[in-house]
Amino acid sequence: EHYLRRIETLDDALNGYITVTAEQALEAARAADDARAQGRAGALTGVPMAHKDIFCTEGVRTSCGSRMLDNFVAPYDAGVVERFKAAGCPVLGKTNMDEFAMGSSNETSYYGPVRNPWDTERVPGGSSGGSAAVVAARLAPGATGTDTGGSIRQPAALTGITGLKPTYGRVSRWGMVAFASSLDQGGPMARTAEDCALLLNVMAGFDRRDSTSLERPEENFTAALDRPVKGLRVGLPKPFFGEGMAPGVARVLEEAIDHYKGLGVEFREVDLPNAGLAVPAYYVVAPAECSSNLARFDGVRFGYRCEDPKDLLDLYTRSRGEGFGAEVKRRIMVGTYALSAGYFDAYYLKAQKIRRLIADDFARAFQEVDVLLGPTTPDTAFRIGEKTDDPVSMYLSDIYTIAVNLAGLPGMSLPAGLADGLPVGMQLIGNYFDEARLLGMAHQYQ
Ligand code: GLN
View 1 (cartoon, protein in one colour):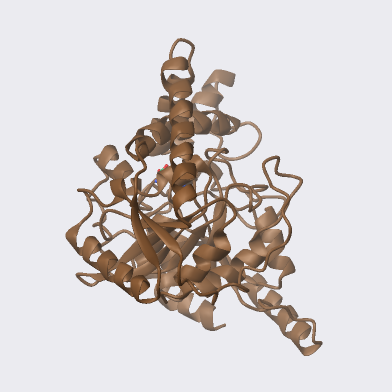
View 2 (cartoon, protein in one colour):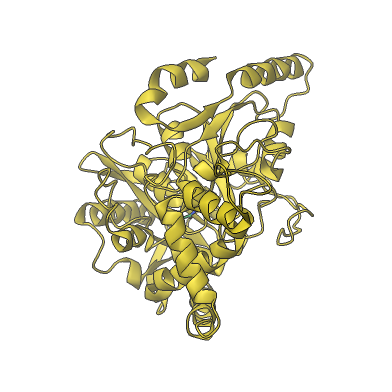
């Protein structure tokens, strides 16, 4: 009731939710009360959650921020949603997002932009901008997000919350609308590292319905939060500390590094020679995969269908033409071009090779250090409309986050401090399956 009241009074100003499921939430909360009364409660029983509108929810619209799916009610729950329901977490609603998770500002949503609670003239980041804004404004204690190229970490940074992108394969992609399947990964967004650890305990785990899900021994991510960081070797990637980072961000990071030095962390510079190629490689791989994944939206089986099609081709072209927004169309065209005969080797194959080089860079770095630390974003939250006419400058807001997705590594963003009154995110990158260490390090900053 507390959160629903806050949503009712505050969300008009933020536009963080696309759908609020008040009645279902209250019903689930009552069931959680009963479970508690009967001594059947787990750590999160009764703690309400918001889900990014990319996760299918049975009986509730799953729009993916698109007109294409405005009328789509999923007949099943995503693996992640099932897990939260089983943990006794009522669902407050579905959060706003960039259309099909393509964007870094939440301005490509069919449902309008999300506003940053720190300054409503500014963006909250994207594509999980709704989840970030509702957690930052206390309209939910925690939320799910997805991170294909920074979409958990970048909005977490711009709204002053904590977000974790797990190792690729940790969290089930089943029922999570596909954007770029080899990069997409769901993860938690919450106020603190401890909260993220609690949420990850629920989210992580093998799902045979996702062919890239990994079978791992069960892990308790809260257990190691206080493990001392003394003696930890932390790398500062050279390309992350060069020009491009705003002075305010650099200052906050220096203080954060000093804090960790005080705890006995050892810092050294490391090189990631191919990091500068991450954004261009990503903008071949992600659109290529999206052009293939989004072929399923044809106006026939589900989603938007145009009025009075005169034949099949007209049905396809107008349904897609009217159902998708401009950024999604741009990606589909770039991806289709990159995959077409004659260009495949020059673009897609080349990008895949670069992806391997980037993963090798990280592997080399992790022979020397345990964790990498750097900024999450080059600057603090920008103004709504500031980058909408310049896709390349928008793409560059993900310059520090994207390499992690290409390599499949875990990464997180935590609030490091303020620059001119706006939150600055610090990014921690770990080796495969080293989420617990990242969470512990973040916990000991907070
Ligand atoms: N901003 C990036 C893009 O537009 C990443 C999106 C994401 O991680 N879902 O593709």
